[in-house]
Image 1 (cartoon, rainbow, N blue to C red):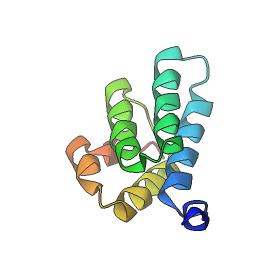
Image 2 (cartoon, one colour):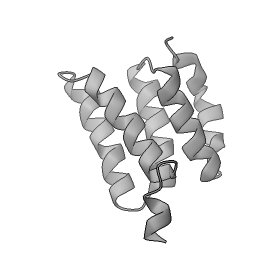
Image 3 (cartoon, rainbow, N blue to C red):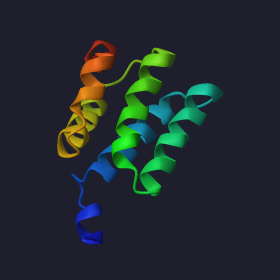
Image 4 (tube, rainbow, N blue to C red):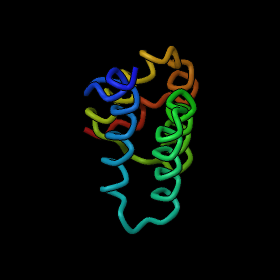
Length: 98
């Protein structure tokens, strides 16, 4: 099972990558960066489904603009986890900034 979790397209890797990418752009903005660290911490604790939900709520709360690639990573992870409801509720696609 641990091999599957480390696959490049596993939810864990996708969520971590999206959160790290967003946090990298927001370096210096303490609130969002701390919240994104919390998302990564959830992934580290095998709570990927909660992490997806938290990540989209962090994006919504702080009004974070996300890249299409980050959005696609979040959607792919949510689809694998059967957690697309969170994305639909928040309307995360409205935060895409191409």
